[in-house]
Image 1 (tube, rainbow, N blue to C red):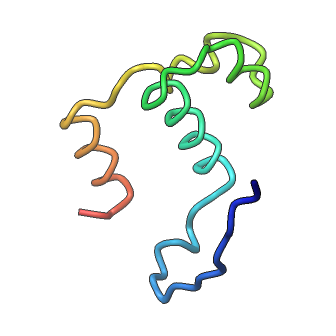
Image 2 (image 1 turned 30 degrees about the vertical axis):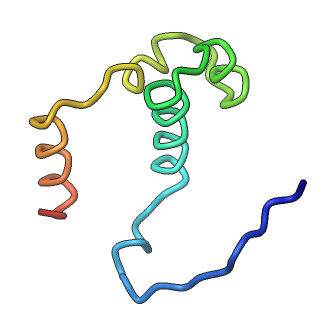
Length: 76
């Protein structure tokens, strides 16, 4: 069964600053934290060679971490 995709555009200029690194990081976080996938599988799929390189994505963010990161991105 094939998923249907829609092509959407946005006028929100913040999206022009999203990098491939941001998307890869989000992808890893979603798989590891939100969906609980096996770390070795995510490493293999994402091209990471060590657990240390994935460590930043393993811990769930705290409200303080979220606030700090959003401040850095000027999204508050």
